[in-house]
Length: 154
Image (cartoon, rainbow, N blue to C red; front, side, top):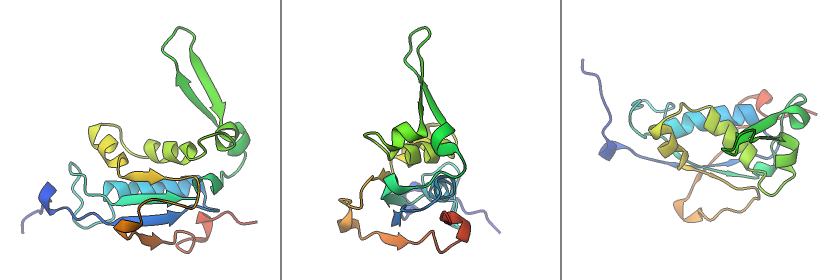
């Protein structure tokens, strides 16, 4: 028995399309992070970019559970002394780039390093329902039907 190690030339990447309307951010981010890394494939190799290309539409309509919409804070530093800044999830979701909440959740569920940064380039997130990737014929993935907890209940 020999252990198979996938080579870069052997990688087959699929395109998948996810409609994020009404989905819980953390559960969607965990699913997408696994798809970007390629852990759902039997040919998964930790040091190779073996994941799929993921397109997410309606990212502005995702749901944050609990009180995260009001209380969750995103921090960054300007590089100057005392330059720590913060913004709440609500401010980002109601702002100019609401898809950044989902992008950050996915980024933070992946390990840091050069390979993760390369794999994150296979992620495309759009706030609206339109995307320019029809030529790639993406396969629609319905995450709501996988588990009842993936979508927020009323």
